[in-house]
Image (tube, rainbow, N blue to C red; front, top):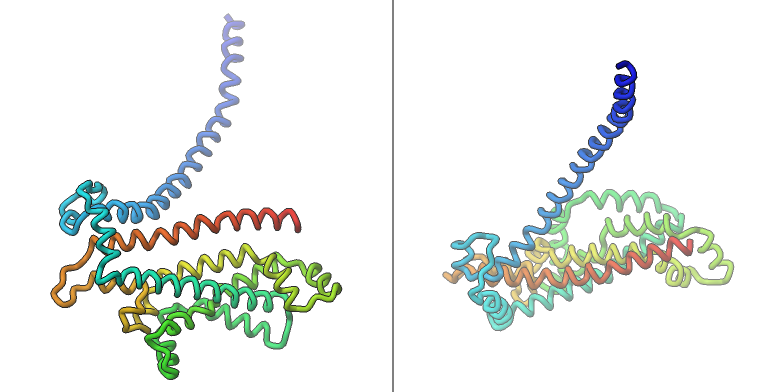
Length: 305
């Protein structure tokens, strides 16, 4: 009898010993479930508005308010909306799209070059007032753009540049955050030994910046360009303050005017939604196309350095 009891206890002991480990495993699963749920909620928060725009673009004005929000319409309104936004007011939407490309590409490229040069100079050179300049840039990062719109308008009005392309481009050419990012990346990614070796070989400072600095900072420059491109593409306040000519409007300001009831005309909700859908496509394309540069340059930098 005692032998049987002993055998039964021996068989139960491994289960007892495994019990704390199993409890820890179940606890880790529960702990991992919470971040997963948070990520799913965040993904839905980002994806659902885009999904709604895609679905709403298939509906007419009447269907927008009479059908379920997440059920598409198959009445053919999608193609009517696309044709309607492109031909709206003699094709003014295409002019707004061209203006937006000019503002975003021009402002993004020039702003990236300025930020790269300024960030490299602040990160690799020590000169009189360099710390004060950097602290001023950091302080400027904290200023919201809404505070600068009116002073910028008054300054550009003094030289007669308001209501022109320059009134939208010039205020966006210098980005304190972009300069700050390039400065930090230049310090971290560009070893001083490489710069010194280039100087010993007789390269000028401009040659060093062009051949060494820009290549080492390329991932940061791509990031800065993408940030600036998206910021200018989606900018509404600055064009709203600076521009009064309908021919100079970007997409954001132009489509805003389409949903404002003026002159007794009906609001063009379905056309505006189709225009928003078309305006999202360039952002998605440029973001996906630039991702490979991040991966390639980060990997190559890790191998070479």
